[in-house]
Length: 294
Length: 123
Figure (cartoon, rainbow over the protein chains, first blue to last red):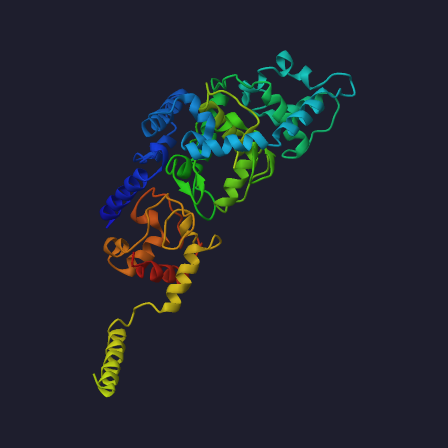
């Protein structure tokens, strides 16, 4: 029974693959769940994961992964580009720039909190802070900056902080993601993010990895499941579904709702570890923000 | 053919149908099949078409195989299919599919109705 089903499953995976678009149709290699193994260095895990996708999509270069599901389908890519032409994300960027330049009560501004006034800074986010014993994401750093200069923190996920994050991240457009995981704490945070990515959650009992490794390149109704590599490179992103620009945490919340799990608050420990894990996987992939997608 | 003989043959066919229905006492009722289909297509319930193609589904997903009559040769009994839907990983470890019974996504009755529907697929 087990065997018959397994063969049936592989047969259908292959035939479904053959009928998919653009020749990028994947037949999922067996044992994707083994990518959840937490042995060796983070670099080794990243190499294993990159190899997994390379085997599945041999024609893609590392940079192609910045396109998300657009890397796997010409139609999807065209759709994203067309969206970009009419995207209201530019307004959010302008709003972010304005907020960024507004002086604090002490005369300083956000730029004073980042090296080089924020230029290229986002490529190194998120990072693990030994002092704070946790992952520091861009929104967390923006609020820390405010508090340092006598302002109240902004509520996460709301338009103001999303606009600021969009602007600050855009100052690294064209730069490759350069996130490191060297210290003991950083490795622990990376592993925690990986563990979360592979943990079955919600009533549907699915993990991030179930879809983004196990079923990557397949369709969930009309939605093409994207690779985990480079996921962070285009966030904050304008999504037609949202009708606004949102952060990667907002995307995490959407995925969690879909698997009927309780979404976590923005910038929760789990989400920050997850951001760290994903950004590290995407090292070398060029940042392009704000992204556009369905 | 005279009208009377036509009537007789119709009566005969009806009797045969009753007999056949009796022999397959556990065959699914059209109502159960219809309920099963509704569950399979509903986003809030089974949502089978999120991942599987089924006859009449608009924009189905393709994470899993297109569902059709092959199901009967793979599962042999309808109860085996219900068991699979209840906890797929018990049969195929790591398969990307929700535990529809074990995680209380669907009730026992609903699982049986979905199985009735899937068992009835002709293409």
